[in-house]
Image (tube, rainbow over all chains, first blue to last red; front, side, top):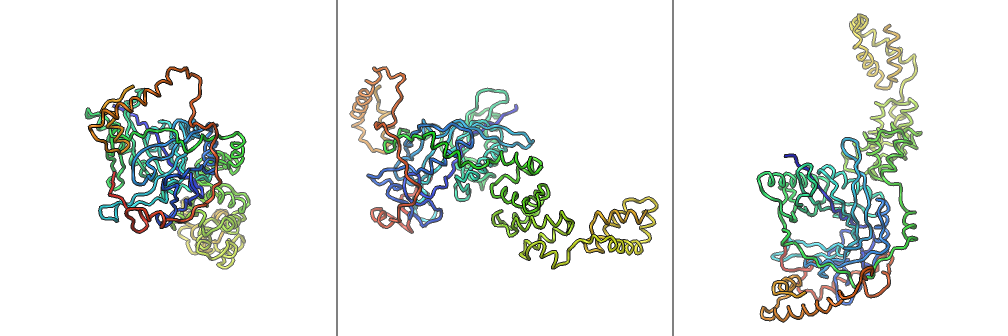
Length: 477
Length: 95
């Protein structure tokens, strides 16, 4: 039988506020345990939560970016469960009335088409603390620094049909929250993590199959692997006459498998109810308008503009706009290079990203600045150096030997465009290779490449290849 | 709506309350009475009335995003039964 996979994702995004969602504690990562946990975060009696304005602003910004409805009134609710890293015995979240509803996100598929994925809702909530199980004999250590950190939980419609689509959606969302500057998106630190609801159904069937929820996936690779494993597992189960049970499963990256955590019967009964400590959140149109003013150019808009303005293919534009920093770097290079869109794209995507990747550096840490790269491209454009020599110049710039002009000058890399000088070299090559000349004249056209190579070698790569070609043809008749 | 012994036990479990088996019928009656009290609301036509999320008809005040709390770990951990290396220690829990 042919099966269809149905996936919905819940993404938890840590918002980039300075202080927590309901208290004035710092949210900075990496502090000594429990030094950023105040009486409010600890759930001490008699304290009251007060909502962080910037957390609301960021949620609204996100909602506007995905064309969603911003609720004029939303409500905070208590989600009740017991766990030691949740000091109050409940998590403050939003349930029936979330702040953001009904948005969309367009993802790019491998075949070049785009697909629109529905975003059901996004709501504000607080994070829990961290449990450390390893280091204490028979005990668990609790660090509550993270407790109360603002999260935006983004819930998609079950519109995704493969692990690849799920990853494309997650990557797009990751790029978006970073564009919006509402999260640093740091996955190692847990700022961007996701749960996947996965089910399968016979192709053509309308009703959804029974789903399993895979918890806490914190890398793009794990999302893809965990979903693929889970889909296989469910299909095998159904094809051997079994049934899928609704349950929560954990992904074990080491073994590359998912395993049951709890079934529906054991599922937590969260007993949501409106939090009496917090009044309803009213968002005025003026507040929304003010946030709209702060929206940057979004990834899709930027990509379309790059295609038009710099005449880039869709692929290049997509790669260069994947992050705001990379896009800015590229545009700066274009400017410095005398507006050479495609040449700049080739160098940024090829040599620069390759070198950064190899060195494990971010675009913002590039030793070659946009000025330096753009300056070098100018020299390619005005024929001072060839594209081949430029590779050496780039490497020298990367190694801190200075700007392109300096390096060209110091190393004498200036391209030879003097016809007389090139002709002299050609004459030498012809004189030194009488056999090849004869063969060429007898019709072995392929040898042209050999001659060009010899002349380039004689010029130490500095002769202008186009000129060499032309002059050779003349000389060899 | 009235509650039976199984429901009372479930509610007690959810609230992590250790209740005396012999008192279950009493709890069942008391809780059922509370539900019956609230049930009276159903006698009123509430169609078209927007439910209130809070008894006060006001909206949430927002605070500026500023760090105002200082580290008081030592003070808070003075009342904790067990701490080590700045962490609160609890009986081992692994889900």
